[in-house]
Length: 479
Image 1 (cartoon, one colour):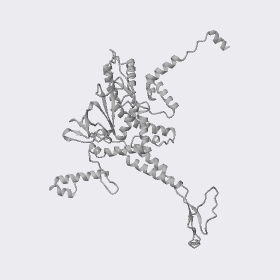
Image 2 (tube, one colour):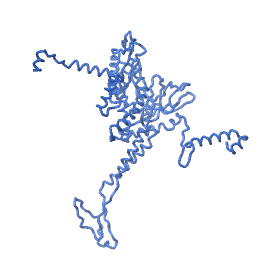
Image 3 (cartoon, helix red, strand yellow):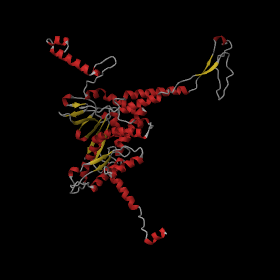
């Protein structure tokens, strides 16, 4: 303590202690002290308070960008391609026998039934499973969250579109109103127990923008899926993946529009007639009507008045700094969403090593999102579907290890190959050194090992085997 703090210690020890503690904090961490050049912005609210105050606005701004901004659209499109892919999340059932081996026959039977259900998995029948997953992913990342009600068993007024009594009702975030009731432990439309676990969701019957009624129902948590982008512990509702880059995206869009308009104006041919000295201008003989000059290649102006000359309106648009500035902004944007600059900007310059380095780093970011998507969406849906499929008299072998019935591999799109020959040679080396398997190699290409091996076996069976030549025929060929 300094002399002043020691002097007030006897009168107000708490004040003296707090003053000394804060002084040491400021001395230890320069960033904690606001200054002329450092604002030291702070967030003191809880995660739920922050989302309650800004979540709806951020969600609506993100939707507007997805509708009107090409860069924002490209970011979400790339996430669909790299996280879900054209065929959706591939699921390989992995039930095992008591001996520990995969029960291939049962796995193929489950896969076939799941493929049939995947043709019409949601209540409207509009989307296949892969289409549904891409739509869910986009809504999740753009809006920060999305909900789904799981329809199971006999439900009044609903007819299932598949043989399995299980379907998904997709719900945008707007269907769960953001309201709280402390007495009933309702926080932002979700009812919690004393441990903070969700036990019920308040769901509107209609989208609030399409209906005047705010009538809602409570759906138990075991029948709901809540896919949320969580950034803080204890956060209940999700926040858009654009939350940290919305301002930059808006500025980028407005700047590009200004540059584009300026370039259009500059592209229009502009000319002016310089009158010269006022003494040479003949007011009496000046024509009141506008003058017209025909422009053509090699035109000569011979109707200019004394002292006049023709000049061109020049412009420095488009600016030479637009491309590098735009590239820098896009790099900052993709850094805030785990994206890849080359993929979003469609800029594929650079060497093989630099492209592969970027691809490797960005792939890890996509895999993180894949893991969250599988954990919150694909795995619960597959397990709940299989649970309902067991009611359709799915025959289980007696030697099945029941604890492994719901096990499965969830295969999302993998890192693409930049140079197929180099990639294939690398995998061949790994196989030769017994540190990789055929199945792992096939999965690295986003394929199912069982399906690939089945196709290879079928091709080999269809290919006629070469006829073995007799000894006499061989001697004739040698001669």
